[in-house]
Image (cartoon, rainbow, N blue to C red; front, side, top):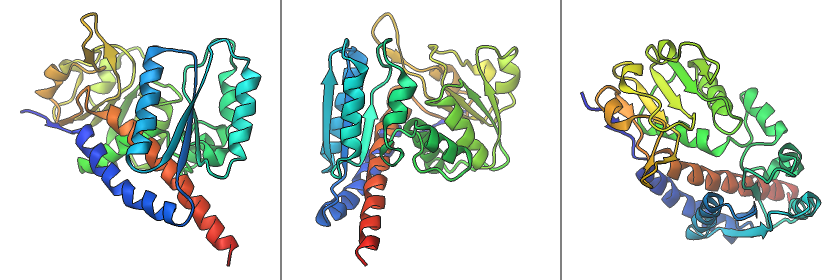
Length: 290
């Protein structure tokens, strides 16, 4: 048996083509979606992520800009800029690229972003709304994974799902989304005593642990759907995920590759969240004008 590969790059492009009409419609009524990305420091990986986010916006006609600060910037300067962007009616989404330098209080920075413009879905108010099953914004990577399940026609109701990793960015929101979709969810992490016991009985495995080829074929139930969120650079410079793709390809029913799997979907869903924010604002303005 060879697994069906869920092509995230193709799905991302398909979704982005659909976004263009929504962006054009918003621009025509004076609500062109606008995203600002704030980058502190010169981390090479963060620079690439930010560039891809800005370019992704521009490619479908959105407004986007990046604001770059020196690594030693006073956090108060960044907080003041966020307050200014919160008040700017032309900006619908604000994103602060993580991680931040050590002298920042990351939580305070994320909480400073208006919940209505928190297109990453990291503000405590938005996390709470997700936990209650009525999200305003879904964090972009788990949102992308849910779209991949949709594309692969994966029925999550009643399935056993294992999420490996408990980060606020992927693991926790992914578990909540799976619960909301009717799956029975186990969250595994570094303190889990028998990981293979959990993964080998799972219909769905989402790996977000940050360890190259950590999930091997003997850990996967035949026919399971395996989603690889990890992206790791090997000593030879090549990229690989948290899943041993070659091995698991022969066991799984569906699987995502790295690169070309979840990665392209993350930025795509950031665009989706920003467009949704602009659509809400346009609807509110139309309602107020009646």
